[in-house]
Length: 285
Ligand SMILES: O=C(O)CCC(=O)C(=O)O
Image 1 (cartoon, protein in one colour):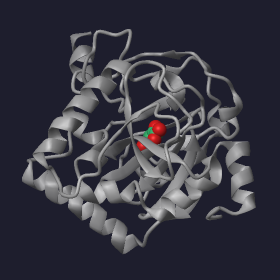
Image 2: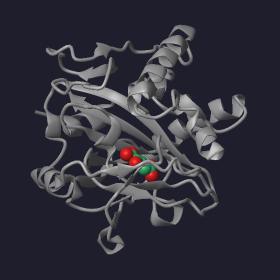
Image 3: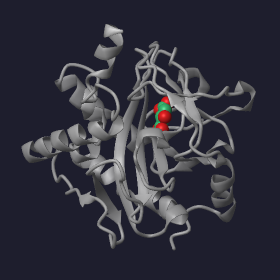
């Protein structure tokens, strides 16, 4: 057992649904990660878009390494044991002085996973503070069952369906997840959380890595995941290969296939079939 987390941190995770800050790498190394992302964005003419923001660890070798980073996995193992899958990854990028926000929600709502044994490692490429739209959460809310959500498809909402909890959230209860670059928070899949816009003059960049023990299954369709530690004795997911270089054409094809299939799970019950469409639908009203 790695024991990256102290007993007090483990207790707080199960009690409050979230712990932070946990240092994964130095600020200088986090700045290098940001530079790698921005070098790609510069070359391709602007911020990472659409489905490139999802499962990006299948496209970039440096992100494939990040999801396997022992500073992250040792902490996840302390919560969920030694056999771990990375189910997905999602960039949450808020541009400077931009209205993008994340409504109050529980991650578990549309993911189709068999049990709420899912932890997100939200890794900070930049600092995340109140002034640039850091994540906020309601302590203890992960102990609630699944709360009904309504889909809004709101234009500036970064979530797939712009989904929000159909209960009043008391803002006086909220806690802000403040992180320096290279630190992470860990949050439970049932935690009620969200984040306001970023009015600052720099981007706020987070990379959310979703981990599950291999015993968790997908119940809403065919799915794949990356074995990042231990052994998979269940075979609930097709196992994804690791890219050894960035943007390998074989991996671009695989990524397209996987993200299209995932979109069917995440958007089931709507008319939407891909990560690129929701804004268009919202604009059509
Ligand atoms: O990055 C944010 O502000 C929100 C992220 C989020 O909702 C998540 O990681 O589940």
